[in-house]
Length: 267
Image (cartoon, rainbow, N blue to C red; front, side):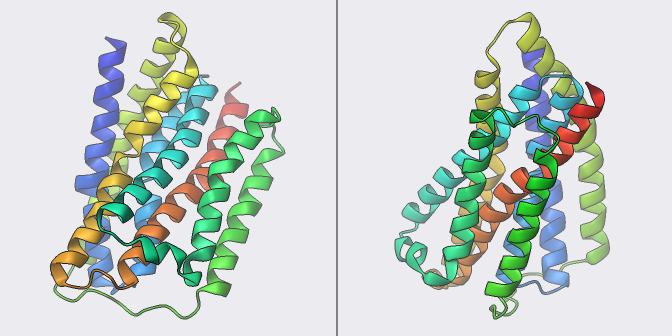
């Protein structure tokens, strides 16, 4: 029964992210004329909401390792999924564009960070919290310094969005995700403690499932560019790379420290 609750909770979060949260972002992006870069970063943060729900709920239920492996595995899987999307649409050359070096660098460091912390047994250290927050600040400052000149809004052919409707989608989605996240953490704790399933297995399972929003958004961006006849430019890869980096950096620089603080306070 706990396994069923876990699966239902996860898919509730995933569907809410795709049908609610991302739809809200689409409305805001169109209404506010966001550039591909901004849209990618915001989408990256949004697609990290499942990881946020999973890590916070597992932290509150004392199953820290499962949530941490969710973050670590999710960041690895996200990189693999981006490579698959790039290969599928044959955009290999874009990855060698010097303008994308910073995005790929931070996405890669975000993959290594949780693994390094676990290796040195620092994953539960209170000193890790300011280190990760500082790391995220460096990412944001570097992004502003190295990416001042960006392409303009790319909303040609899209319907005009509604700011109010977008915010309504976002607020409603966060409420649903919060409730589902509570069930997720409770069921994950039961699976680890009662069924004696290794936490690393539960973490990788969570990581794979919570990476599905990234998979769909990567392909969605390239598919939309192909329909508009703009595939082969840099805007599509700019958006998916910022989606990847925004997601991975949100996992490590925001979600991880918040969840760790929660875990330390609870335990």
